[in-house]
Length: 384
Length: 122
Image (cartoon, rainbow over all chains, first blue to last red; front, top):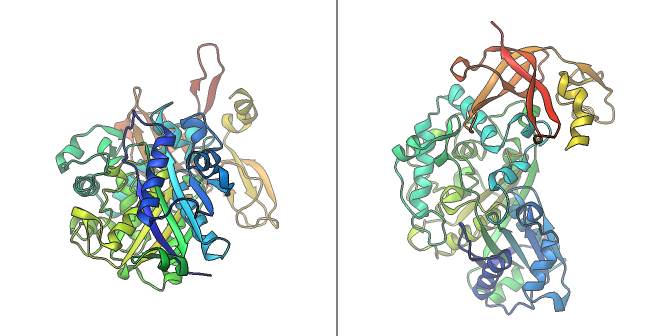
């Protein structure tokens, strides 16, 4: 296996992008990544696209060929592949691109993630297609409801409170206010979260990430090629993926995401690191409780003690392990298939020292991208 | 939606799951393949006990709020279902029993979806 480096990153703004179409935002991200890598475009040997539901969000399938075409790469006929694992689609695209380079099959590839959710239909309802439609959604178990069931049991079992969850949202909004590409660039208070209406008790509106439009792209290259292209390669030291039972009812313990535990363990082993070595993390906070669970399942805290990290400020910018300096899904907006790629964009900027006002001190970073309620998890460890 | 609902009626109207005669585990919803034994498994369909306890729950605050709960039946299998009661009655650990209830309809002229919900055991 060859070492793989990120040599270029790009991202559209996330949010309700009414004046832009799917093609516009993907190309915006792709163009920025090419400019960042100082490539012309024809050097790209393959494209991997993470997209959850072009069919339902846009009525458009065959997304990968569409993107290759409008990126001006149809003339070269390079392979373009879409991958899907609900809102972990972006993480999958990065992993496929990583494997393509690590294996020696390709030298330079692009992984993109994109979703345009505001054109058609109900974004949260379509995102809820990530759960078991016949056995969870049928009885009213949409995505917020299932995370709420996890949250209630975590509170009952470990004493986590609604205020703890609110602190996660407040932290991520505070970070998002420093990120010019975030959907919500404003600071909120704990009372704002606690006074926001319940969506599914105990989760409130401001515990839930908004389903948003957005695109992100990263260009990966083999180590040799990367060193020719850039003086600041950021290496993907591990990129692992794991699955779990699709429905909560099939899992023995809903307070642990086994996919996250497994993917994280494998990543730590491959990268030769331990949880304590991670200095910055981008974590899938589709709901605030998901960030608390991730603290535990990634080994940043013991099971049941995740909320202590947020109470003690450990995961703030300036804390021991800053989590979601970008603002996370909560403040950036959750552009579904784009999210997993956006996380790698953020870590790359952080490790290069190009993250502006939200810059943290770090040489090792971790990304966690989750599909649905955890039936898919992708973990990456990046290092400078 | 109609064909999908139609072929699920047997499972929606009763609490029917699968039992693996090889390992003795129950699964809901029914599976063709036992996740413990896979090819060695011997899976049969069976009716499940009608009572259990609430593992956790939520009140979904839509126009008409409803309660969704994860319920552990007395054979150890877990079922996601709705509970019919006042939200203030809900407690983790409470005993509930299966009931036959309406879930919704496709539209005014469409089919009505019935299924299993749970009610508190007093």
